[in-house]
Image (tube, rainbow, N blue to C red; front, top):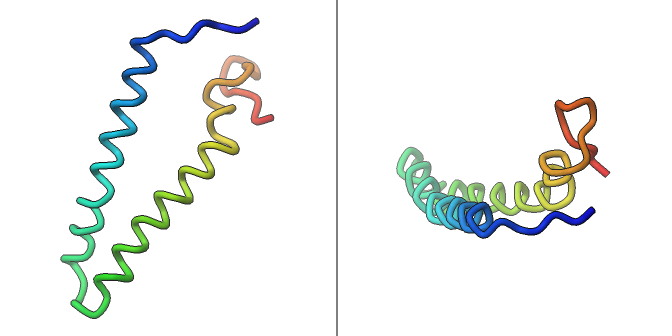
Length: 79
């Protein structure tokens, strides 16, 4: 059966996603301040590449484990 989307839950997810998107440049600048000036760009790119990797991982595997059909009440089925 298809469950209707709750507007409150959806708004909360969008809010959290937006906050993470704002956090990533801040984290990149923080890590960039901890290294020598020759390595700043590499460290900042590392933060953004990691964000992209996590997005792909969430989209392909983790979403179904979080919200999929329950396997023993502990975790969702990753199919």
